[in-house]
Length: 136
Image 1 (cartoon, rainbow, N blue to C red):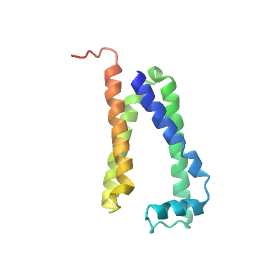
Image 2: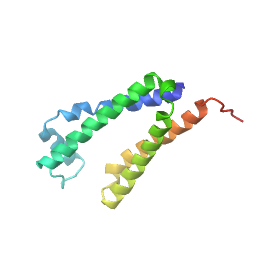
Image 3: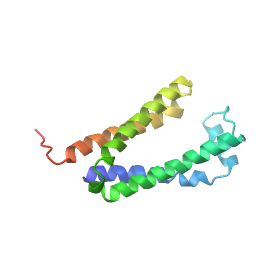
Image 4: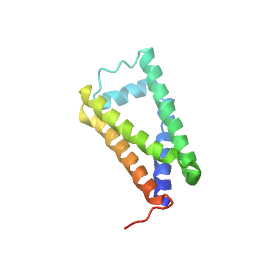
C-alpha cells in the first residue's frame, strides 16, 4: 500500500497547489499565458475568467480528494481503481484535444503524459496490493 499511498499524496499536494493561481490577479495569469506563447487566450473575457478560475478550484478540490483517500486508502477500495481510470481518461482527453486544437506539444503533452502515467501507476499498484494477488 505504501507506493499507492505515496502516489495519492504527491498527486494530492500537486493538485491542491492550484489554490494559489485561483487567487492570482488576471494580469499575472496573462503573463503566464504569454510566457507559453499562447496569444489567442481571451484573458479579459468573463467566460474565460470564470472557466479558468473554476478549473483551478476543481483541481484544488481533486487534490483534497487525493489527500483524503491517501490517508485511509484501504477504506476507499472501489475509488482507487476508478481514480486510476479517470486519470488515464483525462490524459487521453488532454492528448486528443491538444492535438486537434493544434496546440504546440509543450502546452498539452506534459498534462497528457503526467495524467496517463499517474493513472497507470495507480492501477498497477492497486493490482499489486489487492488481497488475493500472488506474484509469480
